[in-house]
Image (tube, rainbow, N blue to C red; front, top):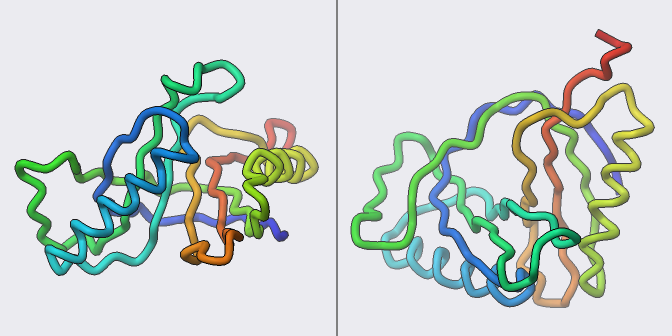
Length: 157
């Protein structure tokens, strides 16, 4: 596990909203969007997930996430008549937590990230957070990066 801070450029993505239990809906969403990209000949660089709800405060059936693929800004995509949409992930300062998730321990990975940020010169900022999957998870383990918007701690400005 490692933490770095990165000033990231904006990312162009194609994404789709999924709803319900993330352990069921996110993999299905990825199958659909990756299948679509292969059919369309769209080359993507990253596979991302954006989580919009706190599972401690939201009923499992109401959980929302967006599965996304990063594409070059000049890539022409045909999304008309599909459930997909184009978006821009804002650039800015992010804490990036690189970790290996075993046995579905995503909550621990996120907790570890927030503890590491708490012990840094940065604090959470309004913005987005997302996971960047670095492998296909065939062995049941997920090498990933968690990206969280941050800013210098108030006392450090």
